[in-house]
Amino acid sequence: MTEEPIKEILGTPKPPKPGTVEKNPKGEVVVTTVPLVSEIQLMAATGGAELSCYRCIIPFAVVVLITGIVVTAVAYSFNSHGSIISILGLVLLSSGLFLLASSALCWKVRQRSKKAKRRESQTVLVANQRSLFA
Picture 1 (cartoon, rainbow, N blue to C red):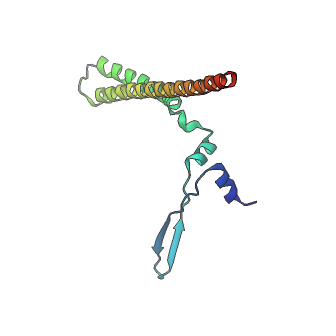
Picture 2: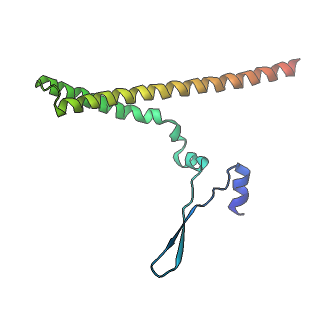
Picture 3: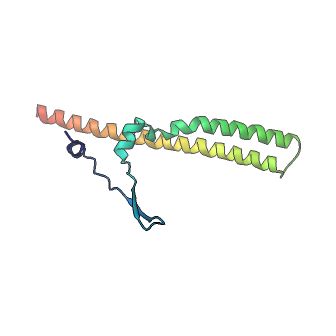
């Protein structure tokens, strides 16, 4: 059994194989093909983890935030306003806050989409139940 019918059954389109054409010093033409990875193949390889980015960002955001707090506190304890270390601390602090905020935003959007999907499936179930008992 070949792979082609299986791919068609699963509904994954056959990805085009882009190629680069190069000429070597001897005048020969060399064609290099690089296979593309589809979204379904990526989901199969990662186990669907590409949709949980907000969960991965949280630990890094917390570490950056704590580092920013410590560096800023050290910089301002030495009364070095405007120095490189105080600017670095403020950049780390704001980066940590930005990562936490973006993670919370992604989580909120994901929860809304889950809730909408649940609502849609519940509506379909209720409609089917009504048609069965009508």
